[in-house]
Image (cartoon, rainbow, N blue to C red; front, top):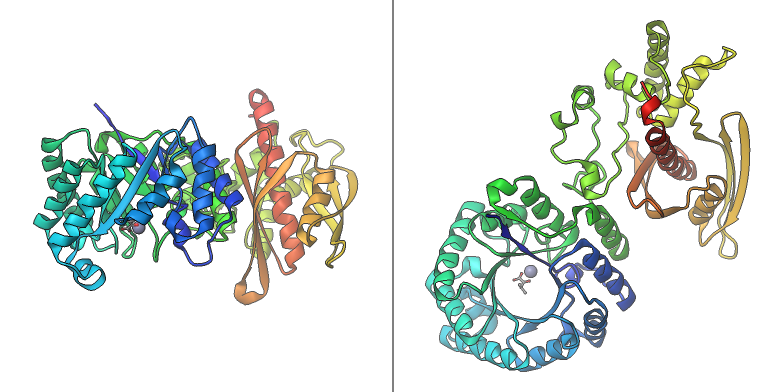
Length: 522
Ligand code: KIV
Ligand code: ZN
């Protein structure tokens, strides 16, 4: 039988400890609502004693987030902290007090400066006090992985006897290694279940040596009932175990772990993007599961294998985590098979071999010049190839938008943009005023391409030693929910921004067209 793993998300507490990532109450509420949609079991909403703002944010979350996750907040083992947590979460449907106190010699001697016995007593008194306020209390043995095992165990035993309902074993400084941590959890679990098998055993791993996900998964394999994570792995120093990695790891290898979570994985990308945008913390492009390149295949060998059967190089489907399948970025190395597949998106019938060879030659020339060839480039190659003929029997009826010209005015009063796009044989012009030049530009495009697109993320970065700019966008079509990505390179940052947005919109048009014409496609 598979065990349900309880997921506590601490993006709003440990995650918010990242320098510069402070959020206001409204922003925290937005993230909390999304965490509810993601179906985390517990939201750690903050550290209420730290400031009035944090206290208020936790209180708002506790009041608003109902019919879903339990709400917790952090306290040190002192009455004032516990009172602040209680006052901030008492209106939650399922409130949980979280107490933390060090157990390693280093914490006890250098930070707490009391004897081990005195510290244990403080912890027990804190749990007893919290228990008078609420039935659910989590006790965290801070820096557990560097602690003397027998002292750690005595502390856990005493906390359970005092009424703790969850025991959390943090690898506070990222010191653990998977085999050793797994063994530690196996030992604690065995002893704990002999005392009281309704008390949950939890882990909280930091990523100082890049092992937070591995350590968390090793703990799950060895009996942990609950895991603590953050979106995109943000958190103190090198961060915490990334929710998306641990959850997907468990889902993909549920037989191995004998476990599952209740996380709605289709909401992972949405949640990651929201957290990244609101906290201003970019997700590294090759980040597992949520990075921009997590599902991008560029080598010809991989593209070929993927096109024959997705499972060759894709153990995880992008749509499972809420990402619309990525367009294959073609380069001069992509090879015939990948190019043929890109071309076939626009065809109603198979392309004659001579046409294909001519198109492939044009593609190679373009790829040498542009480095990366996008769907709309392939579309224009196909269109140009058949333009001389009266009829282009192969080409799909789905036109794509092409940038003809643009003008963007940046100022404090009325940032505005005018744009001219080509769609089939027609030209369309649009203009808009926005909050800034890029907002105006995207509004102007939206006025022409009526797809109800919502921009989720926009990035512009310099590449090729600063000669060129890479624009990247993520957008959502409001009634559809999936996230679409687009990118483009140009020496002009405004053009790169416009092209990236158009690429994403063209991708939506193509996906929609493919869905509608599935039966008619070759
Ligand atoms: O890293 C840590 O030890 C913590 C505790 C509060 C669980 O964040
Ligand atoms: Zn932590």
